[in-house]
Image 1 (spheres, rainbow, N blue to C red):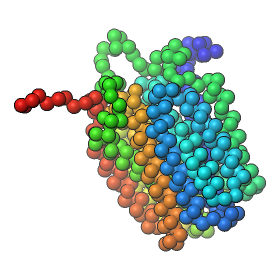
Image 2: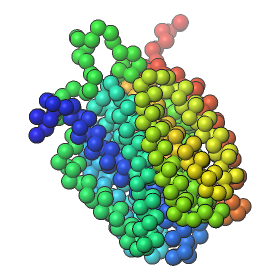
Image 3: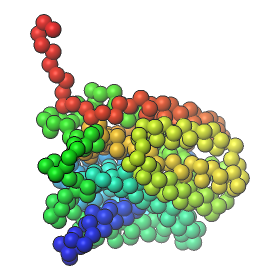
Image 4: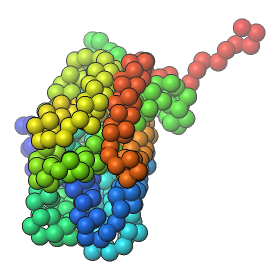
Length: 428
């Protein structure tokens, strides 16, 4: 089947992208489910928002902490095994979370196990698959994967909100387990680690002897000698990528992803309406991320990031004044367009600077920064709400951070990093 399919259509498009996208959709859906569960957990188990936000922040932090390890393991053992491990962990964590009765269990099942599981089957996996299987159309594939993650929010949030109202949060959580478990067989049977496994080359990869023009930054691989991270942390580009992506995590998954629905409910907007607005955000996120992938193949990723972060900052300055559905819908459209649109240009810059071969390792640490920012924002957002009574101060602070993130992105040098600096001759 694989050989016939690869002869007619490129296996990477037809199977690998499809399987990876659905895995990212489920992982993203499970990650976004916590925003729906905050109010039910408050009402059913009597936990405070600060306590719940702490468990959420642990999950976001470990979601990011799993990324460097997942990137390192993916570079060595291939994405297929890591994808399977992530799906199994997601299934275990959600099934255990459905029967929890104590706060420590929430932190363990949803925070620790769920964070690691979704981190293993998350953004680093998509970045690695895209850069292993594609030279041309890499930005488009990254956009598809980012859109799949946002589609998880688009699909799972309103369905989960409806299930929580109809059958309760425990039964609704079991549905998440079923989704993760159902993907194990397709990944096991269809997913492959690299084009060579099915007798192919990466899409658009032209042998050097047949290519009249050598590729510039995106195709140039750094020397394999030495540990790539040891070189990466010595460059300002790594810290600019990590810092700006940390701002992305704080302002998206951490703050809006966790506290958007609670903010809406605080202003008297119904749960179904708030979930619908979040679904609208997911829909436009889908559009924005696909468009960002297309743009990344054509324009300077640094300038794209500068625009995205600045645009996001302006929308966050407005959010504290959004207290009705019409304003909520407008914000959902505006913010949704660049919610995950930062992923394709950030992943592409990582490959351009540090080499496609090392995307898993380097992007894993860049993504950890993203989730560190998300974890801090998720927890501090809950604390701010409990202490100050609303999210106004937090939203304003996040807007300032977003603008600073855009400035950081514009300072990145896109050129590939050498393996090590040339030695200076004695007496020079």
